[in-house]
Image (cartoon, rainbow, N blue to C red; front, side):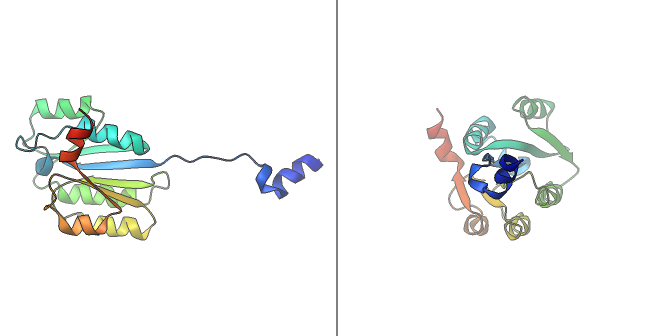
Length: 161
């Protein structure tokens, strides 16, 4: 019985629980998955897997997305969310909802615009780490200046060849 009491009193002798960084990633498909950008989602996924464990991975597409694109996204381990019209609202709502998921530590956006700034601010307010993947350095200055970490996708291309 004294051993058991000592475990509760002496915190140093209790087993340590190592918590891994759990990640939610939200991809603005129509904005980022364009032929001119040649984005490879597998490289983003590899980068994030080195940062932690991806628990939520969603790509938002509009009703004009091709079956081939949807299949490719699913094959990379992403859930597809199809919306009618602009995907920004659906993505922002889902990302903001994820802020309240206690299992998620980091919320990641892949986009070129600052439509998700309110979601990022809510995430930061609730102690979540925030990250954005951008295509070029000139895009989404507001996002770049607000998130905890910025990753430029063109630099990933060189890193994971």
